Image 1: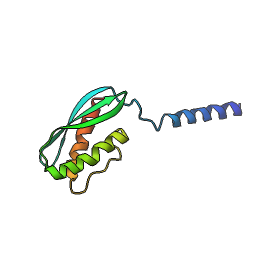
Image 2: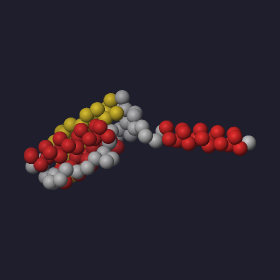
Image 3: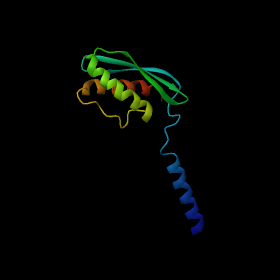
Image 4: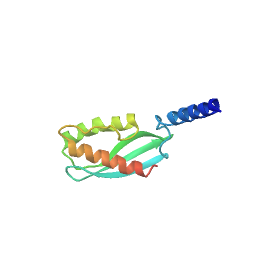
Length: 114
């Protein structure tokens, strides 16, 4: 009886660990738009999901200071694609509000893809 119980517990642990690390296929395929608040107003993004994964994020509209926004965009978008979401994506120093606006917009778009 103890052996059977031990095997069942081990199997349950392995199944729970196997399901933890992967976000593959976490989203429904499609293009989703979201809006976040930046320093100069709304930031609108379009998130493309293909095969359940974030394939691309594009800026649709924004009214931020160009140089600051570009540094935030160029840092955050590749990280969102790499990490398949915004968890662990840091804001850019000097462009904090633009960074937060992009992250908020991506989160709003992804909420539609779940």
